[in-house]
Image (cartoon, rainbow, N blue to C red; front, top):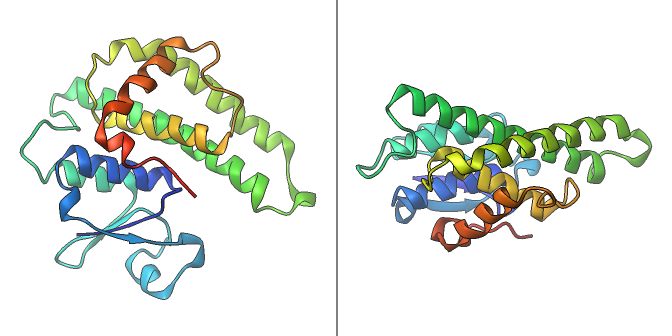
Length: 201
């Protein structure tokens, strides 16, 4: 399998972390890709020119990260990251969506601050995204104690979101006033999937 990724993409990190947690990382050919360049061979695989994208042995390409992660989870016989039990499955999917929403807002802020011309930037837009991130973080602070120490797709997604906030500083220090979430984030760094996939320029 061929995984298109970059070291700065939190969505690609989520797919990479999932592969490690599933014991499948040694089956991946990691292809570093600049999605903004829209290279012809990449666009042929993913017309959206977004990463991650996972090309299977049969030539089929999967995108985006929730689809890739669930596929990877279906390819191993160990503990499933996407639970079969309906209640827990929907809980994990909702937690994944909340974390991905943090990422969507953080990436939107990043684009506004670094790519959009300064005279066209909209402060109200960035404030709206930051407010969404803060609300989501407050929810995570209340919920983290109920995760029971398991590292399923929800917590994996949260780890990627918090790591990206540290990396890009989309909001002021998210740890302030959130001791439980901060402690959880510190403890998960003993996992190889978290250590080996830290974002970097």
